[in-house]
Length: 199
Image 1 (cartoon, rainbow, N blue to C red):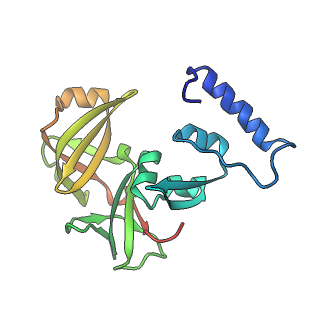
Image 2 (image 1 turned 90 degrees about the horizontal axis):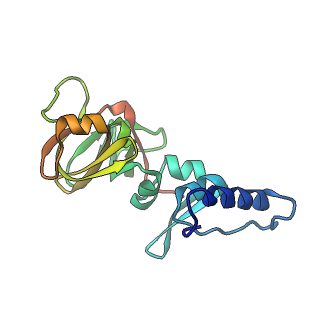
């Protein structure tokens, strides 16, 4: 569907959905290869994420997109993923950055884990705002990307790549530019930590 215009693609996707769910659908299922999140959401019941020629993770679409275990799946879902080891109150990355979050019951301290957060939950400040959020990272802005009525602010905190989605108005008011030093802040309740194993 890559060569289809924006009005034709949804129509073709709908026809495919009807065929794949209809009475003449193959009994053993269908394999669909795509790089488009909309195809996955509209057509798939389960998904296998391939990275470097190997299955990085697999499972129900909802599970893989809301609880990714690989950076690649997180990118597809539009989520920030930080890898490390679980702690009692979150995650510690290999460079020693502590990330406060809500840890799944089945995730034990010390085991390989990932912290996942929605970039819309990340606030961007020119100076450290103080207050109660336990996750505060000083970030060097590397890139700004328009995303409809939002701007994705990409940045680095040491070796970690982070990103936040802010409104166009907020980005314009802050006059954000690559090279700026800003503070990313996110509440611990907006960070989910789960085991890196499985799938």
